[in-house]
Image 1 (cartoon, each protein chain N blue to C red):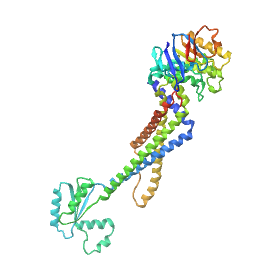
Image 2 (image 1 turned 90 degrees about the vertical axis):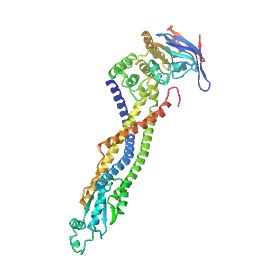
Image 3 (image 1 turned 60 degrees about the vertical axis):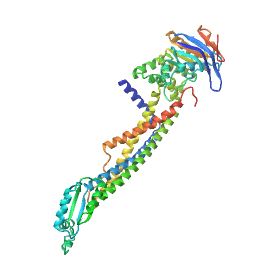
Image 4 (image 1 turned 120 degrees about the horizontal axis):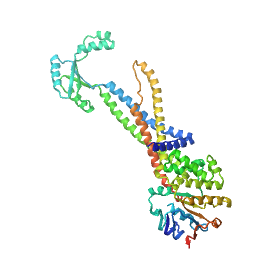
Amino acid sequence: MMHALAQHLAVLRTVLQRMFVSPLAGLLNILVIGIALSLPAGMYVLLQNVQGLVVQLSGTPQISLFLAMDAKADDADHLRKQLAQHPAIARTEFVARAQALEQLKQSTGLADVIGGLTQNPLPDAFIVYPKQSGAQALDGLRDELAKLPKVEQAQLDSAWAYKLEALLKFGRVAVLILASLLSLALIAVTFNTIRLQILTQRDEIEVAKLIGATNGFIRRPFLYFGALQGLLGGIAAWLIITASLQLLNHQLGALAQLYASQLALHPLSVGDSLSLLLFSVYLGWLGAWLSVARHLSQVEPGRKP
Amino acid sequence: MIRFNQVSKRYPGGYEALKNVSFDIAEGEMAFLTGHSGAGKSTLLKLIAAIERPNSGSVLVNNQNVGVLKGGALPYLRRNLGIIFQDHKLLFDRSVFDNVLLPLQICGFDHRESGKRVRAALDKVGLLKREKANPIALSGGEQQRLCIARAIVNRPSILLADEPTGNLDAAYAQEIMAIFKSFHQVGVTLLISTHDESVLQDTGVRVLALKHGELQA
């Protein structure tokens, strides 16, 4: 066990030595991988943040039912009973027109203007809390409630949130496409790096094969190299994202102060960070594996290239 | 230990390097393989290490038919062979010590144990003082001896040498032959190819003579 570990450590040391042979090329590779990964991962972080904001702002969906101005208290009572029996509605809240006017006075500081009104311009209203929150179910319920007698208008308060949700879905697909394409690019980068390494180490591979090295032994350092390069690229991507969020948050803080509110982008969660690193390690390993599978058989003693 | 049964080898393009060759080398035997250049000496050695495969006949090493060996089994055959290449095949990106270490790394030897073995092998060929040098700084004779050290560090039971005294002057050649004899004395099976008949005179060792790919009786 310790012996096997020592062997793997020895391979790792060889790989590190190889990396330091051409530090600039290695650094550039890592940077390319880092940037390529940080684009989709960064977009993902922004989407997560926007989504968090949407959930926070929209809360539970509600439908506001505004009654006609000529509706009497009887009509309102009748409607209340109807709503209470409706299977898709969790509960309702009645806002009398006088109460609504009072609230408006207090919350907006328009007391003077409102005081000057000769009559209350606001209608009675119900706030309806539906049981389901799917966009389609809500639309159907709103249309249904709008047709009830004495209902002037039914307004779905969180409709904008659902539109944004749809937009976010679109964004997520875009991120997925971008991530897939850039992943392919990363595999290609590693593939080519390993191909060049195999070419420069042709002699060593041939000699090793001649004195009894298994394919696994020959493959191992290349696979380690790919995985390690992937890991370092992933770390670079993480640093790029974290630094960018810091910069954005700095500016966002100033902006939020103007609106007297708090706005901050959340960084990558621990789970997402680990996923990013694991994914980049896997991509590097895969690129190396493909390259080794393709090129190693060409270096066979007795077989001229 | 090594047995050839009516072995023929034809290279792509039609060149026939070996024609119907049969011989038998017993365990612990030392034999020379002679012939003009192009007589098929290198091909014969390559067949033993399964670097090339015969077109007909069978090559048995340790009762194993190496001509039909699968790729995955090749490494284990070659670990049992020490091969001294005509062109040395030394690696110039590492020290003398690390060149000899390579076969042990491949076999997965313990780090401390392999250090001892490498030094013992280098001592045997008289290169212990040069262990830190780069092989490119060694003379032709020293490179040859380094190649021998790498071939024996694994303590193989069979040693194959392709023109080990090829470009060396007589004194160096004698030295290297003395090293081979010492292996013979400890029971290693040796097959040494050479075009230099002078090294054979005093030995009384068995000689396999090849001529245009055919073994002379």
